[in-house]
Length: 232
Image 1 (cartoon, rainbow, N blue to C red):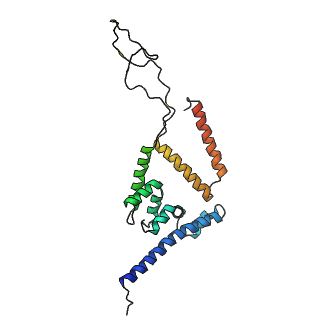
Image 2: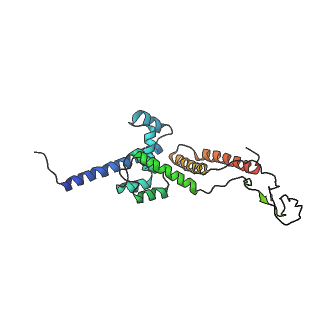
Image 3: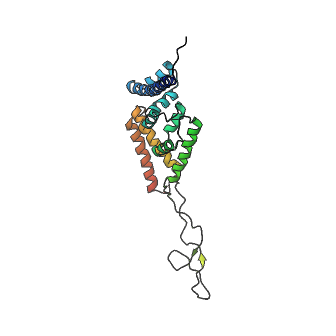
């Protein structure tokens, strides 16, 4: 005769299996992180390619998600989907965007990867709009100015010698062409690049000295452009 269980007993068993699944998911990510730190450079990737049942890209996603404390905390309350690809998309959100979406219920256990991707793209656009961007150029005069006798403007001879102002264009020479425009997306990408470099250093993928050397070279180039605005 098959064993019978009450609804409460089934609930307890399913919850236990769910918790074990979640714990195992993060344990797998943590173990990969530990192995990457312990093994010699190059050995970790070879191990994944030859000995493990998933790709290096999949392992990278597992490690990044497991290292995200926001996801670990929310997963304890069963507030997140359990698909790795969906969690990886949510991992890309800023802290503020993640908390807002979690509080509103936009992030939920039924969330799909497509929905997570749309959420990330939407917040990237919103973040771009909030960024204050310096433009290293002078805007051309959109409208003609009124002659007032001030220095820098052409005075128009009035045959009636009245004080009526006349519309004229600025006599100042046009500024040189813009060096460049720093778009909000470019600034956001620079910030993300810095975060990715910091993570790469922590994982041991790149030496800190190498990153600093390249960074200083880029900084020197930007400084030379600032001192010589004619450089394109």
